[in-house]
Structure formats: C-alpha cells, structure tokens
Image 1 (cartoon, helix red, strand yellow):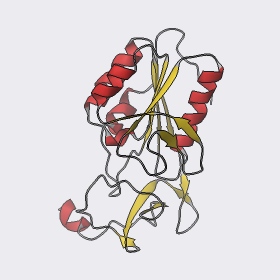
Image 2 (image 1 turned 45 degrees about the horizontal axis):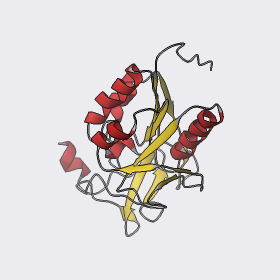
Image 3 (image 1 turned 90 degrees about the vertical axis):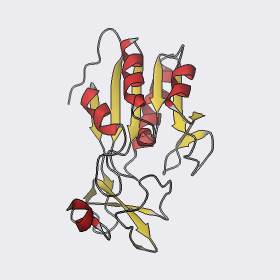
Image 4 (image 1 turned 135 degrees about the vertical axis):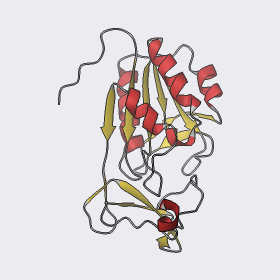
Length: 199
C-alpha cells in the first residue's frame, strides 16, 4: 500500500481496533519518528486512563511516551498550540467535540494522530471514533489475537468473574487483561440482555 501525505496543510490519521491490538504502540512509533525528524510533538491521554501510569501513554507491550493527561477536549485545544504533530490516545473516552477540534487542528496544518477502540464491549460504535474515521485521510484498523481460538480478533470482550459482562453494563470501564479479552467475531459473546436490548 502506497501512502502519500498531503504536500501542504495538516491531516488526520486514525489507528483503531480492539484491545491488545497494538494501537498505542503504533501511535508511539509514529510520534517518535516525528520527533526524530525534528518536529514538535505532543501526545494527550484521558486522565481516567491510569492503568499503567498516570502521565505516560503506555502500551500493553510496555512501550511508553510522556503524555499530557487531560479531562476534556478544551484542555487539548489549550495545550496543543505550537505543536506540529498532536497525538491523542484512547479517543473513545472523549466527548464528541473532539471531532471538531481535531479537524480544526488539521485545518491549521497540524498532523493529528488519534488512537482508540472503534467498538465498545457490545460491538457498537464507540464515542467519537466513527466520525473521526469518516473524516480521516489515513485509517489503520489493527487486529489482535483472539484469546479463545487464536484467530484474528477485531472485538473486545468484557468479562465479569470470567463470564461475558451484562449488555446493560457501563460503557466506560477502564481495565486491562483482568477484565478484557480480544475476541474474533465467532468467539465474541454478546452478554446477558443483548437480545432484549436489540429488540
């Protein structure tokens, strides 16, 4: 696949997929390359995501990069001034206004790289991700390895005491391997109450 970056102006890149697919690691890789190229880089993360570190973006594999923890999109807008490349991790946790501001940054000539889950544990579109996908110049949907069959996983299974979480559970619940598994379509279980919710 050949990718040609715009010759002028900024653009939006989206890295998505299920948990354990390497989204944060890929974002860190891209931003480090931008730093090596001498570009001014900043990465933001939602303050609620403190699984591995309160300040750094940390991948499940252990790659890390210093980040700016924020609680709202307004803080991203405030702190992004003066940077040529802006990364935003776990974008599914941010409010819908993120889309507008990410596009404004790109329109001002900034390269915006966002990463996050495209589906919640119910396999429904998650937060601002669907709209970001529709506006992006570049999209990469990564796969994990299914924890059940070893096949290509594209969904995230939330577990409660080892069983699929109820369909009615909270959408946002920060966790890692103790609460989530990557699953393929065939191994993903909808959880109790899914049939009622779909009716």
